[in-house]
Length: 367
Image 1 (cartoon, rainbow, N blue to C red):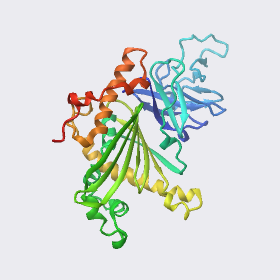
Image 2 (cartoon, helix red, strand yellow):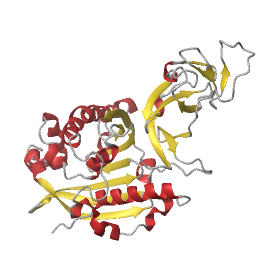
Image 3 (cartoon, rainbow, N blue to C red):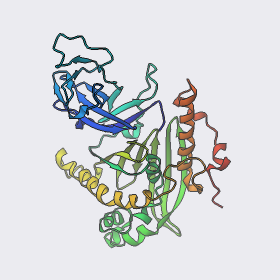
Image 4 (tube, helix red, strand yellow):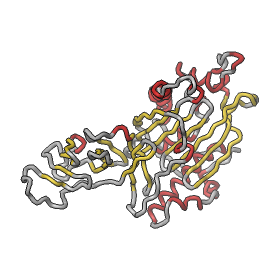
């Protein structure tokens, strides 16, 4: 995990004012709740008294009560009432919950994991995500893989016609990506499987955001191609733009063996004029998320969950030329971790990294 970063830990809509919510993120058990005015609170989930899970407690006013003895804690983490001692009792200052810095941006809850040096940087959300006008649906699930391997599976798009070919639902991919109007899309399956080559690859670096533009195409048939754009922003956001769809995925470690996924699917702009009501327009991305979780994710995890070693890093993979985005991610992740460990240098200095790092063994020749 990379210190001194904002991590997306939950959807804002999942935390209400009527009950606390427990999550495990970044190796920590946390409790999320809202005060009566809607302000968000994030604290350690273990009661300092005897270790009960505060996520099983109850909200009363602007305090959270432990489910074991109803010790009550305010938004700053201080215990303000211990019923067994009486309302007038003096409570030690050490009886408190650690409170974490959180913000809400883009419909998500973000936790700061690192040194609390003021002012903290802004949450990094690239314009292609922050400025998107389309309606969307966001779902959440977890996978039993290290987050670096999950990220790699999204940065590498040429696995798609290989991994996602053996399920009836992928017929929609065949038609949407490769089917021709002349044949009513029915030639899509054959053309889809043939798009295995990456051409016109171009990688740009903007601070801690990487952008990869390329064409996924059929060798020998210049008409069968799909332009792609994959944007990655540290520590764990991938935005994929293609002609048929747009998606954004945020990945946060639960621990060293599991990853939490926040997957956002945007409405199809071609259907916007036909489906006037927002509720109807959201049906398409919701259906797409349903299929993503139950079809594409299952197909991906059959492969990714078996990859060894479980954590990626420098000199772990033997990259080829079209893996430049993946290689850049590995190198920059390593540099960000080193910068966070050595002092005041911060993430905005990562663009100083030297491309010779790729030539030193992290990036293999395609020859």
